[in-house]
Length: 448
Image (tube, rainbow, N blue to C red; front, side, top):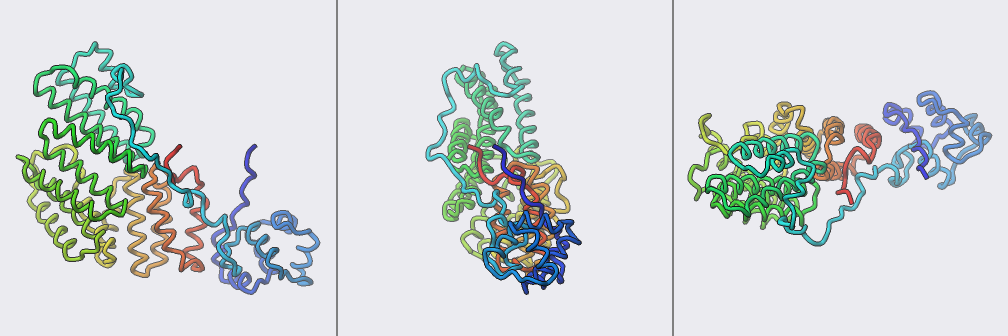
């Protein structure tokens, strides 16, 4: 049985009109009903149906011959006409908070099963590259590695644009296929290359679980990636995985673990031959995140200074690994701004995040949404309520375009910070726009 349609929202321009606000404050329902009719096209007969009132009673109210004083009637008017509770002196109504902001995150208690399942090579998943490789009769060579690296680059691009939920079966299938290939004796360069591909696929799988806020599974795959990289002594990639685990720890409110993990990442990177300044700059920003989560102002600033110093030493000819090429000046600036934002230093944070958001690739939906919500939060810290709500409204479109519970979590955080300002017109406008973005378009929890 289908659910009844939601009552039509009143126009934001009406909800923020001083005349309407005053009529609601004084509970002058004759004027409220008149404004609703004139500005929203909701006629008295529709008002009666939506508010469970008789048409004659509505008519008497509009004519000024009757007042509505009973609390249950006022609540029905709030719910039926979608007038936010605070305008009528009521508590927040249940419909005011969209369902995607109230979903309780669920997470399995145990990590997923090991990857080397019997027969995995015969089940490459929804993965064209894996199927083609199998169809080639098991012939594995440098061209196979090139194809696998190309598919990984494409996975990361699509993860930025759409989220990793739908990609995960293909990535896991390809990971199982590569792990199966590693069971056979191969020349050292090919063996090491396959280990690198498997490590990257495991890290990507862990990332998709991290973005879905399913942290047990993410840690299991990050650990798998760490083991695969360690097997061939790839210290730089081990540093990369440890940095991912550090970032996850900050999201789990475990800043001490975050700092320990990023310190281990830096140790691995410094011990590795050929570690580039770009890698060290990225790791220094992750260190800054950990210090900021701990509230260590001096240490955060020190790590950010170190990141900028490393970045200044980058040479275009540096042999950067592919997994760190994303860390450009825009990323350095936005990460610096986020670290300042975590410290509450909004004056420093705002221009950096705003500039990065202007430069963000339009196709990177998750990055645009993520950074816009951070910008909105630091604008709110600075008392710029109208700007913060405007920024957050602009973030709703990219947030709805990507399946990312992590982004939805930042939306929930910002929405919660607006609670003291519920009566402000800018907040009313933001919440109205947020309710228009249905729960199916903003992912707030992992799918069952």
